[in-house]
Amino acid sequence: MEIQGRIKMLGSTQTVGSGGFRKRELVITTEEQYPQHLLVEFVQDKCDLLNAYQVGQQVKVSINLRGREWVNPQGETKYFNSIQGWRIESLQAAQSAPPQMPPVPPADAFEPASNFNEEEYDDLPF
Image (tube, one colour):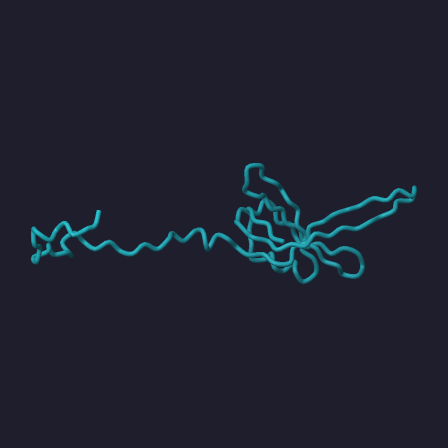
């Protein structure tokens, strides 16, 4: 899956636990009628993908949805969801460049027709 939007928050890399598990959080604000602020986690070596990005940039993020089940000490089952990013691309390079238009020739670049025949001018079928 992919989500597109503007980077609202770019967290620093955190190391969790003694095993060296790394994670970095990113908040994307979607640009739609009802904008959503989505927290996306990048983990382990994917944390470094965010080094080239800044708050305010428009990006497209490839994500996986993750879910887990947890049973609390009282025996109640709880469910947690997370959004995990695995690729990020800037959209600004494609949007900031204006579309290329062919140059318009100057008005004096065209010569008037010299072989114009008055009787043949209306040869269109409509």
